[in-house]
Image 1: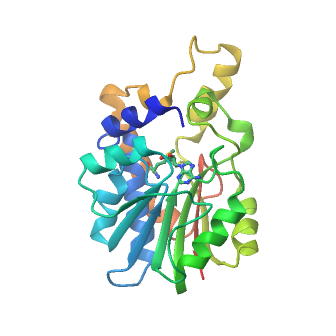
Image 2 (image 1 turned 180 degrees about the vertical axis):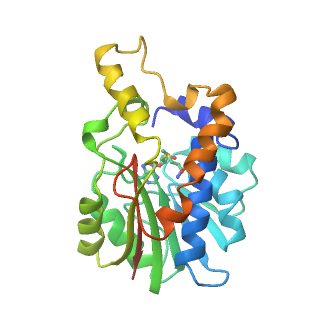
Length: 244
Ligand SMILES: C[S@@+](CC[C@H](N)C(=O)[O-])C[C@H]1O[C@@H](n2cnc3c(N)ncnc32)[C@H](O)[C@@H]1O
């Protein structure tokens, strides 16, 4: 990821509609699919630590790992207690050390040369019946300027995520797209970027939704019951729950 993105992420993730809406969706998924009490959670690719130190900490004891020191520096500012600098491709943990792995928008990055190796690592460090909660960006044809800033290697479909999880040993329990209601707007934005390229490679996080922030957050959050129960048929993100 472009190093400037960490600072941007740190400053916006507590209030930006996308993060707050995804929090509501993630909470609904955790409540529906993760029956364990106080699980040991690994947040793999924890970024600047908002998910880990705010809502994930309510569900269990969270350890965060990230490849980049800059990301961990911001996690420390949030007083994250358990951190390690490591790659998802080679986790510094013994087999069966965690009951749950969360990995939000990590495996698509260029720094993850092979997502199957990472998924096999998640499988290895999970206890029997442990769960993985995975989120990835959807559809390669939706690549935009933001993908340049965050060093996207690839974007995914439900079918591909299903195959990767099965190949790494997981039983897939739930698959859904998310960010569906705003999908037409996002497609229009991405396509317009191709006709009228922005003057610089601007990150989506730098775009201030202003007065619309609450409205967009409300729209994204409204998907939570559908994503966590029946699943949505298309959207900007793919979400999966797998069991060891
Ligand atoms: C888009 S950010 C997502 C951060 C966080 N999970 C979130 O949802 O806000 C992707 C994160 O993956 C991390 N990352 C990229 N490649 C990695 C690797 N091989 N191992 C561990 N972390 C990695 C990046 O440093 C970055 O913090």
